[in-house]
Amino acid sequence: MKLHLLVSVACLSVVSIARAATYAPVGDPSEFMESVNWCQLAPVNCTATLPTPTAWVSTPSGKTGLAGLFYDTHSFSVTNDGFGMGLINSTYIIGSTQYLDDVAATFDAPTDGAGAYIQTSYVGDVFLSVYLFNDVYNILTGWSWSTHSNGIPGQSLFVGALSSDLEVAGVIFDVSDASTLNTVAFSVGTLKFDQVPEPGSLALVAPMLLGLGVMLRKRARKS
Image (cartoon, rainbow, N blue to C red; front, top):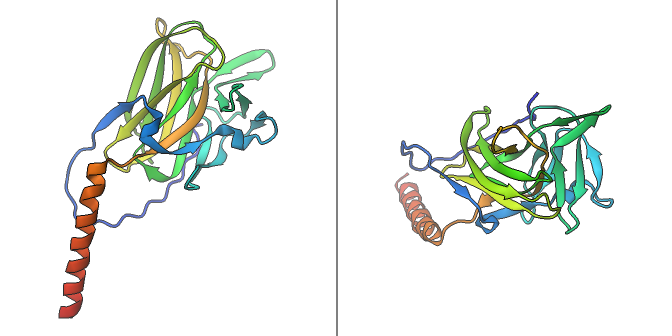
């Protein structure tokens, strides 16, 4: 069963323009404003076993969502990477059998993109992948980074993706062997989301809001 998702969206539209969303990969965590260090889920030594899904709260704005394994409802483990960052591990063990899964997070309010630091103990050529999905589990976009993993603890690569619209309800992470495309063991570190607005976008917002205010005042005078 996929990670449970319940998103309620309220929208106020001033001008409606029909257009298709555009997407882009992100390799720089500074492009996002909000952060979730998974150590918040395991306050004692950043080590715990938690149910899928488990609620999280971001900093600095206190936004909320859920996290856990994507395909299975099995509990997941949180550990410390040794440098102060919490990790959600994609593997779990039942008896003597190790199972592999993807890691996912959902957002209680839609966002325009997300990413996270990825670590793997696998040695070899790998694809690190991120997928954004909407509130009905349709994949919006996906990007993969090809790299050689030395399996050294603490080494991370940030992978993320952006949408031009506020349509992202969740994000999925996966690491696979580059030759077989089979999923390998990996961990997801600090989650980042909410794109930092571009200065040009902020410059456009103020005149638009001012114009709307003038228009509303004129209408009020006529009534």
